[in-house]
Image 1: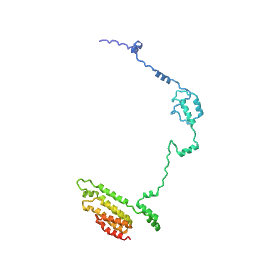
Image 2: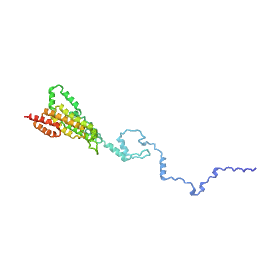
Image 3: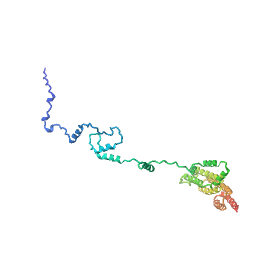
Image 4: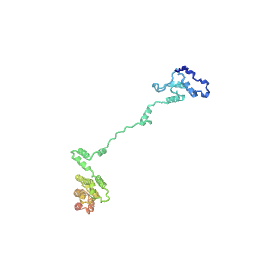
Length: 322
């Protein structure tokens, strides 16, 4: 049986360490060098804080009063400023001089200056002027009312006073037919806008009529209704003016291929002819005005036979003048 050799005793670790003093310079570990800037920074950190009172940062110090004593300020200006190791840098002499200059040049406003500023306003900040409430005129009030509301107001003002009622009737102007004719022109444009663009048809067939039938009926209702409105008001002189202008608008309506579709247009002609007969009997036109209306009747009666009976009535009206 083989015998084991005795183990070698472990030697301490320090026997194996290499002495760096025996190594060459290039093999030695690199030691950090301290630059001049780093040495200055280290010296700053080692400074002891002064026991005297120093200024602290505005953020760390509590709020203080803004008022400054000028006597103390003069002393601080005369004495040299010593820079200390504080959180915030101290003010220089030039900065303190600027503060003192601003404090010295400040002057309180006199009562005269206050009145001047109030009258002309502040140039730095413009003051908003309050808008004065404008008094609404009677004309603007009446424009906002509907026709029925205006009628109710006039009747309420007149009341049962016969004399005042007669004054209102005498002051009423002659009705204006311009809005009535503009309404007919608007309805007529709607008819032509609704007509489809047909490449293969005449554009006046049954299909096109069905597309614009609603607008045609609206035109007829307006033409007949406006004439009846003038007749109810006994404005016969104005009715004759309306007949001449409305007749032209009716003539501008499209002529349809189917005769049954033209009944709406014929109905407008007959309504205007009936209104003409009533207006000739009750109108108060002068002889010259009646003669001018007769010339117009002769022109339109060539195309429409509805106006031929009115010519005899106009001749009778002219013969009644002395």
